[in-house]
Image (spheres, rainbow, N blue to C red):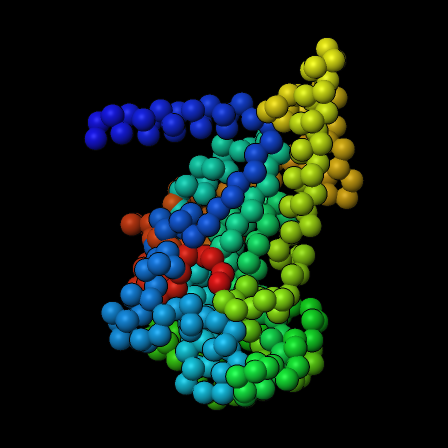
Amino acid sequence: MASSHGAQEDAVRRAAKALRSATHVLVHAGAGMSAESGLPVFAEVSAQLLRDGLSELPYDVIASVDSFASADPARRALFYGFWWRCVHSYEAARPHDGYHALREMCAGKRLFVCTSNVDQFFARAGFEPNRVCQLHGSLSHWQCGGVPSGARFPLLSREGCGAALTPTAAVTPPSDQWDPSADLCAPRDWMEGPASLCVWCGEGRMRPHVYLFGDGGRFQNAEEVTRLEAYNRFVEQTLQEVAQGAGGSRSGGGGGGGGGGERGEDGEDGEDGDDYSGDECSGVDDSGDGEDGEDGEDGEDGDDSDDDSDDSDDSDDSDDSDDSDDSDDCGGGGGG
């Protein structure tokens, strides 16, 4: 056991050294990143739903496109209730200290984050939103899900209209009608009323802008949320700079650093449009170290800026999150 612990510490030291010397950093994060903020990883969600007597269906069935389009009102109520409960618990939880520590370690580096989480914890922890690829979307927005057919196949009689996304706050059921922390099933009046219809086409049903189980091509890849194109540009440019630096080293030339992806002496980043040079290259929003999330908490100095924020939405800061009860039923920031 001691030797295993020593090997782990050695690996951490090597990783820290590599991060300190790097000029380009690409962070890939999943549900485990937010576990320290009190949100369970998805492997725990189904067991918790069953334990709490909320549903015998596994979460990947409840949170699926099949449930969204189901002809059974009870099944649809579970779908909406599950995702509204996630919205509620994500807003109540806060990014833990690990988010802030990572942000500080990457300050001044050319950084990009790619996450499958949908909790927006990276942005709330002060990472520059334009440098965060939310691969599976975000619960901060909803999209037109199309018109359910009421049949097993095809699920939809008309696909989503593809219009602009709608902020979650604009489609949230009134708090005096439903408390998602107490009831997993969304109110039928909201679910089947005009409030759940697409604000653009007036026909499709709204659904979270999250890659659902069974979604296929129905997820609307909105660049303002996913930043997938920006992520691809960052990776392509970084690989080019590393290759150019390695070539310069072999030919005896100076300039943009070698395998570590270091910058050239002129410090130019060569990116047009999304320039990664200067302060912007850090991928860190220095305008505020604290949280700036939907819950309106603006950094709470000590607590939040050093908070244990995680990208997986699955854990709770032992001291700092009063949302552990609400968070128990939604998996860490990941989509389906």
